[in-house]
Image (cartoon, rainbow, N blue to C red; front, side):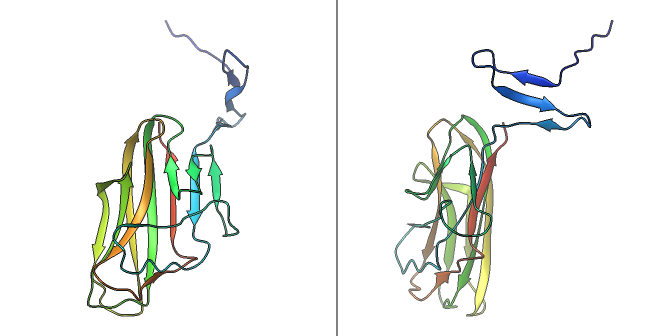
Amino acid sequence: MTSILKVTEIQDPTNSNTALTIDSSGNVLRPQKIAFMSKLDSSFNPGTASRTVIPFKTNNSADRVFNFGNGFDSTNNRFVAPVAGLYLLFSLARVDSHSTSYFHILRFTLNGSVINEGYYIMVPNSSSYQSSYIQCYVNMSVNDYVDVRTQSQGDSSYSLEQSSTHFSGHFIG
C-alpha cells in the first residue's frame, strides 16, 4: 500500500512560522537560512604576527556581503554556529607584495585551535601576488566559532588584497 502526503507548506507547531514551502514547480523553499559571505574593509597587512585573525566583516560596504541567520560576528571577525550541525566553510586570500623568501599560511581555527583539514601553506614563487584557498567541513555545536588566520615566517611586507579576500560558509544540516 502506498501513501501520499500532499502539502505546500510546513509550519512549526508553536508559532506557526513557515518552515518549508513547496512551490508549483516542486522547488523547496526555506525562509530561515544560515549562510554568510564576509570580506575585508580594506587591504590588510598583518606584519609578522603569528596566527593573526583576519578582520572579515559582513557589516561593511563590500560587494556581495551577507549574513543570513546572523551567525557571522563582525565584532570578533568569526562565524559562530547558531545551530548545531555540519557546516561547509571557505576562505580565499590574495597575498600581495610578498617576499619569496618566506612561507605564508592560511588556516581555520575552531574555538582557537587549528583545523588541520582547513590549512594551507605556500612559498611564493614570485613577488607580485598569489592566492591561497581553503575549505573544510566542520561539525559544530551551538556557539562554537571558526575564524580565519594568516601567518608568515618573517615577511612584514605582505598584505591581503581587499576585493579578492573573503570568508564564507553555510549550514549543511
